[in-house]
Length: 210
Image (tube, rainbow, N blue to C red):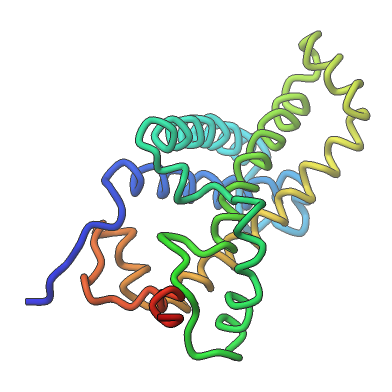
């Protein structure tokens, strides 16, 4: 039997799937709410779409807060947080590998710089989506109404909310592509939590120099 080693803890996997389900559902319900005639095949009526949309918003809040707390409490933030000092220099080798211009890439750690950039940006975008979403959802609440006016008004907030939704869609596509390019074991590890001990994660540059 092939020897396996731990890659993702149970809580990491739970928060990953909570956030993935919430984001995908939020995108679909959001597109329907934005253009019900174009996306009418998704839902029977606006009430159901809105109810599901805001239920997933609360779920996303739970998932993001839980994942951030876990990352800080366990030190896992070192694996996912984008380091502006060192990670940008790793992009050329990463781009060459994922565009099939190179057969291998250096060892980046648990996640490559592209994934780390997406995970870090995701946190900020999630906050923006929650804030703009609740302002649009409850504009009659005084402090939310004042916040909406301060941020540019309803039209501006709707545009920001809509644009970030599409960025989320692009992030999901890129996330799946990056994982698939690494190999099936990487995809399976988010279900099982384990990866083959001999799985190749990239060459160690210090070893090459020696």
